[in-house]
Length: 430
Image (tube, rainbow, N blue to C red):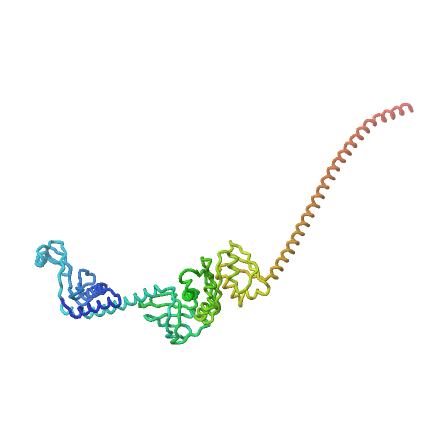
C-alpha cells in the first residue's frame, strides 16, 4: 500500500535526524506502533489481539498491514488462524503450525494512516525535544547559567534560559537583591525536574553556597585548572561569605591568587553578588590554625581544641571579642559552618575571671577536704584513747577483783579462831 503523505513524512524524518539528532528509525518504529492501534480502533479489532503488524519502508515510504495467522487443518478462527489450503495458496511450503503473515488491505486505511502518522510524528518530536532539553540541562546541574528575567513578582522569579524557563523560588533568592523584568542575571542550576506533562523545569539559585564556589572557578584560573582547591564555603546570602582555599604547591599563595592584584579578582565576584563581603582564608589540616583563620578579620590569641567532641575554645583580646563574634553572631556562625567545629569564643579578661573563680573554688574544695581529714584524724585519736582507757579499766577491775577475792579468803581463815576464843571465855566464866 503506497501513501504519498507517509513518504513525505519519511523525508521530514530525515531532516529532523540531521538538524536535531532525532533518530529516523525511532520515529518510524513509533509510527508503526501507532498505526497498529489506529487499525484496531477503526476496524473493530479486539485490543487483546496482538497478531497485527504494520511495516513502513524507511526509504520508499511504502506501508503494509499484516495479520500473523497460524496454519490449521480446519475450522479456523478468522482473526487468528488460516486453513492449510489457503496458506498453501500463498506458499506451497507452509505446514500445519506455521505462522503466515497475511497482508490486509483495509478500505480507507491510507487516509487514516496519514492522519495518525502526522499526529504521532509531531507528538514524538515534542517528547524527544523535551527529553533532549532535560538531558542537556540535567548535565548542567551544579553549573552557572545566564538568562533574562521574564517575571518577578517578589515570590518567584522566572528566567528565560533559551530552550526553557528557569524558576528561582523565594528561598533561593538573595534577600538584599531586587529583580526587574528584562534584567540579565546569572544563577546556579540547583535541580532539574520534569513537570506534569514531562516539560523540564530548572530550579535556579543565587543564595546557595555553591554559587559562590562556581563564581570563584570562573574568575580564578588557578581554581579552574586545579592548582588551588576550594575546601569549604559558608554563606549568609547578601551579607557575608567565607571561603577556605588550599594549594599543594608551596610556591602558590592561595589567598593572594584569589584576591588578585589590588583585589581585582575578588572584586568581580563581589560585584556579581551586589556587594556581599567575602573572607578568603587559607585552609589548614591543623584544626587550631584553621579555626583561628576562619574567625578573620578578628585576631586570635589561642585555640584549645577537643578532637573527640569537635569543640574549640577560642581566646581573643578584649578589644577583638565583638569582631570575632560579629553582628548577631554572624562571624562566629560562619566560622563554625566553614570548619564544621563547635566554637566558643571568650575574651582574655573573661578567661582570667573564669580561671580565678576556678582557683578559688579549688581552694575552697581543698580546705573542705583538709577539714574533713582533720576531723577524721581527731575522731580516730579519740576512738584510740577510748579503747586504751577501756583496756586499763578492765585490767584495774581484774586486779580489784583479785584483791577482793584474796581479802575474802583471809577473812574466812580468821573467823574460826575468834569463835574458839569466845567459847573458851564462856567456859572459864562458868
